[in-house]
Length: 239
Image 1 (cartoon, rainbow, N blue to C red):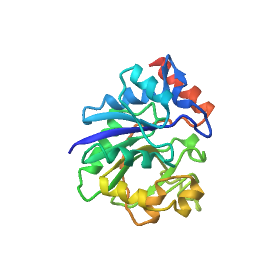
Image 2: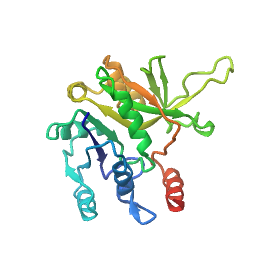
Image 3: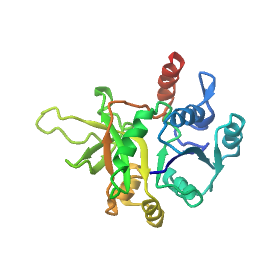
């Protein structure tokens, strides 16, 4: 199974502008993500997909593979799809450009999910830390017994009506797709649930495309806010 990783990276983030080029411990955020993904021995190649000349130049200056993609893409998945039209692989791994704490174990879990040829889309979850259960920036996921995702939400799901203290799972911003799933995704309009939650993976679910979820014990921190940036910079600085 040939798997390549694509790291979508745009410069103008809504909540934290220019975060991809902000430095943590002497290295831009996108570089931390690239080198972390590249450490997986299971990937045939890794490249950054961007619409920014500045990001492209920064990557190439450090020897990180990068390609320019359209500035009209509305999601990272659309950017991965563009790459899939020119780079052939069995599986395309999408690691969001704001996930600098990604580990080889995350990639391994994703590819274990995709080892089943019937699975078109895969992702990962981890037990949700108590302090993030009610944090809307930490996306939660609930799954069926076979690992199929039932729903993703910024809300706290499942709702603990009778105070039974259920296990909550946090969704991590890493995906794997087969080419037909990517083709289908970009042919569909933005879905109502996707618009409501601002979660692009809901477009798959709302259109009947199953997402299967592997579990990992390793948490990650997506850099969406200044507080996230400080937390991750401290972790990487100690590392």
